[in-house]
Length: 278
Image (cartoon, rainbow, N blue to C red; front, side, top):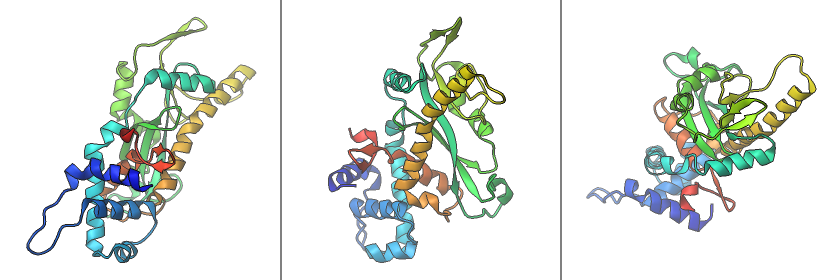
């Protein structure tokens, strides 16, 4: 992240991060708190290492991370993680081979330490404790909708059915009423998912079993377009490497940090940043 982008981010978060000095000590500047939080999220460093890096107390590092994460959620989440220009998204997926598509959806597991209560609910299919981040992305891999906080053991389809996104798609209020004719069937704007997701009029998933050539072609095009969400998760974890290690935050704070990372993981001229800045 270059200095200009960093200062722009600080300015955006400043309304929620400004603190007054007290008789006991001077408050940390907004810039220093943002720097501490970004360093901790981007590096798999311990709190002790970050403390030494910035010359603050260990508890100050933890407080700065949560203050900045909450400020990002409060001030930037709804501006950055948003649907945007639907026609541009549809045109982008059409150029990749799938018509009238408004996004690709998938879930990823964020490792955590074993919770004190209901720990078995957080053991995922790969055998480690995790929390689920489910995301819808556009043709460029930008997050347009996220849901985070479900235990790792919960199936992707169940997570999806319990989201506001599912309800809005079911009601037909998430995308504009824009249909095309495929064969003799009217096709609304759809999203693409893997076999774990339910087949819906507005959600396409791959064919399974013995396939003919047309079904194989359908699966190929769907898989090609779905790769954007896999790449988005890879980009997210590559930028914020704290998501690759087992988080020692509380179950209440982990979703906040994950959502904050997703909010500012967009690419802006090579910098890590959200689209809110331009």
